[in-house]
Image (cartoon, helix red, strand yellow):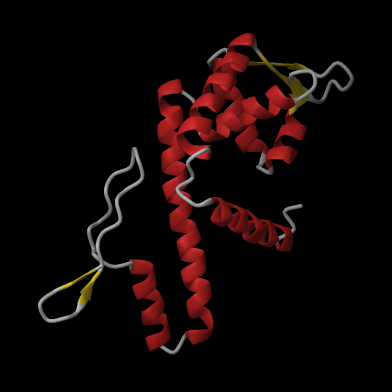
Amino acid sequence: MSADTTGSIEAQPVPAAPGLAAGSGLGFDPIARAREQWVEQGWDAAADGMAAITSLMRAHQIVLARVESTLKPLGVTFARYEVLMLLWFSRRGSLPMKVIGSRLQVHPTSVTNAVDRLEDAGLVTRSTHPDDRRAMLVALTPSGRELAERATKALNSEVFERPDLGSGDVHALVDVLTRLRRGAGDF
């Protein structure tokens, strides 16, 4: 912040995170302004919630952009990376499609799409489950394992180890979001 000659305080733009385009240069926080407008309209009871949810949605966009820009050179999206890592962490390197959807908490169609793309890229194979002919088993290939390891190394160094928050903030954020997820029946 800086003061101009009239004594008013002017907000300074916050630098963009590495790999992201610079902000709009508005010189103010549009979500804080929207909150003020909610209050001005008499929607006080909803103003804080609107600001929280809108901030969460914007933060999601920012974080997803960082993650996707890190993974793009490796030719994988975050959704596909999650499938690779779930398989990587499994004891056998394979899981039924239904289990993948359940653990990732996504619709079966999303799992099918991700597995289709991973299979096309030679990163996973799909076969009939040996114990249940109705179920499909997805297995990690050696190429898939190698890509999962490279992607994890990149995400760890470029995103996860540098979340642009202090350690205390990271822990507080995880705690708050865990309570939100638990309240929504996420687990």
